[in-house]
Length: 77
Image: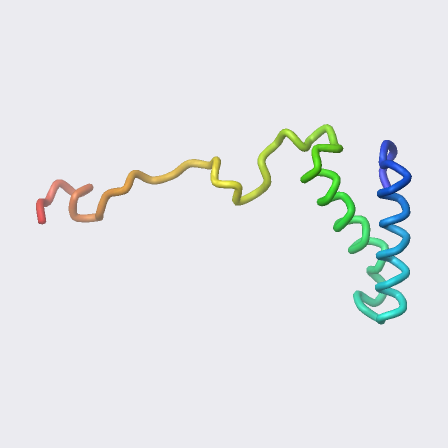
């Protein structure tokens, strides 16, 4: 876990890692997956420095105007 993670997040990470090992999920990647889950939760809760950035697919990107192809080409329908 990164520096600055609360003891609660540390416990959560260890619990997830242990659970994945017991279940045989993500063989060899238990630590990585547990860390990703906990880091995502930290970001969503605003506990990280980068949490101010919008999540991918958050809908804040460039959007095309709501027009049809024919209208954009100058043809009327």
